[in-house]
Image 1 (cartoon, rainbow, N blue to C red):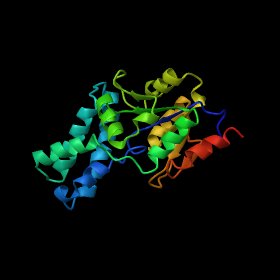
Image 2: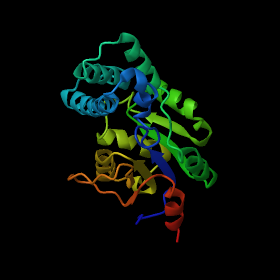
Image 3: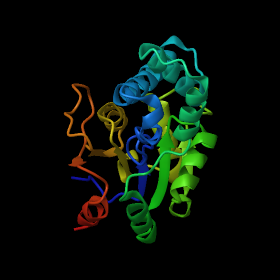
Image 4: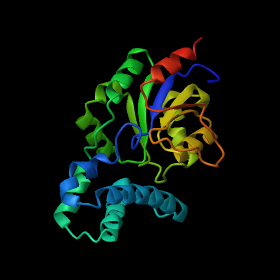
Length: 228
């Protein structure tokens, strides 16, 4: 249970609000039979490269990480198509949001919560996705790692939410579909709700979610129960 009623709701972007596999799905006919494998590898390498760059102290923004990880995925699939590469990168800047997202964000905003995105993505990339999905009216802010030059799960990233909405950290409900992200945010002290869209299992790491949902639909009800 929440230690106290949250005053803000902060959301991871990729995989939580936006379907990271919708870019390849949109171009499935051109990618071909390896579309699912390309999409999975592309996503996995995005994560690995953010973690490795953080450890190496060799920051590059997420636009560069996205391109490098796509190059790896296409090379692994033996696909050499510069036009397709360009179109996939463009599609990633216009990812589809999950169906319940606009309604949930609207409800939370109307109920008086602070609402923001906390993302590894660049400001420009995230503004593009937000505009494509039409959810900008329900957001107070988009918090990115650009100014920090380090990626999640660095505690400095999660501190951005506290800097924006005020302490205590436990008064901020953080939602992510990524179990590793939940571990990092919970260890920092945010009150975490794991959006377990793919029926995964928790990581064997410090930091556990307070609640688990299969999608975001039940979040307003969960938050309302925290006032009882």
